[in-house]
Image (tube, rainbow over all chains, first blue to last red; front, side):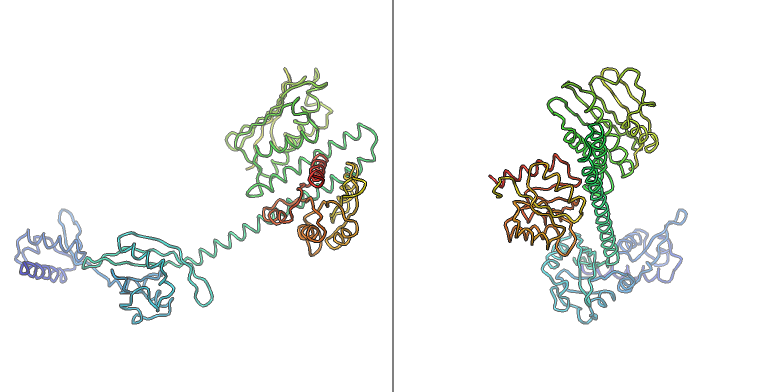
Length: 399
Length: 128
């Protein structure tokens, strides 16, 4: 048996020796002739050398040509890597480390050669966590961990790969590859900080806008106490309600996760609740139903949309159900491609007066609605007044 | 509690017009206005003498102490509760404000109906 093994080793060495002097490579026939060895044996030894990586094979035309592998010592390759690399044997003894690894930890090869982990030379990676990870790796599991290490007062962040490794002699080991991701991590943290600042700034802006809207509302309130004429007081209250609908858009924006978009369903629910409370609507007499597709819109569209909803809903609540009449108002929003929004406000009330024309109405509320839809939202508005009133508004909302 | 049985209310708001509007609306709702201050220092001095039953406190007021700090001091020194009035809906601020165990929150711009509900609920709790 041993004689066979020695024989194989000798023959393998002969094949390698021959290929060493033939940089253009040799076919099986060439090798067989030159070494005076039968083709089957040559084929067998070449396969062994191919598997072990000592020989490469290329197909040239129909011929298979074998070359000696151009092998570079692994230690030289390790030093080309920008990563920190440590190789350990099956007993977690340190066999090899590249220059980056040694530089980072302030060590030289002699310090670590043959040292086992945990090691006093490497307290940073001698933690229980690392040692237990290495045990898993030696059982064949590849693992990745994020690690922060302090060096000279500054933190370095590493993405560490623990790779199961098999040595030439078939024994298991582990390779630890530490990629320095400090720059990426710092850039991420800078970005997060910038986003936090942006959120704070947006929150502050919405807060100030709402405070100013409160100021305007207060001025109107104070002025309203001096007005005795009922019609004039109603007009003032309508103005105040419009201001509150603006404030609600800002509140919805402020409450949204990015402080920049309103979620339509949430906005509508709040608007219905606020407007109904403002107009002191009896919920048992007039029911308001809201349904919206998943839709969001930015500040500009949101403000105009909010004012349109305010006018159409208020109009229905104030005028559609006179003298204690009962009924329902429904607000439906559908969203199509490209954020095309379709808003329908419908009531089953008394309907609009005969001959009502949206284009020539002198109602301020509906004039505002037309201006907002057609001029600001660049959309269309139409109405149907058979058996109640139904307003159709279509526009493309900015996202 | 005030002897005439109407709740004595204070307002701490650094914006004079908003403060004036709130005071009038509070009076219109039948409550007694007993103090008005623009900052923490004045609020604490006035509260010591006027002892309101509750204070409507703006969270953002000028000066070293904000509305939450002032509310904590009012409760600690004089056991006076607050209703916070705010345009600020930041979660951290809300958590901080909760430490003062407020009787409620009013979001700016404050509607009459919300003011009425907040004051009557506070009154119920104080008299309860």
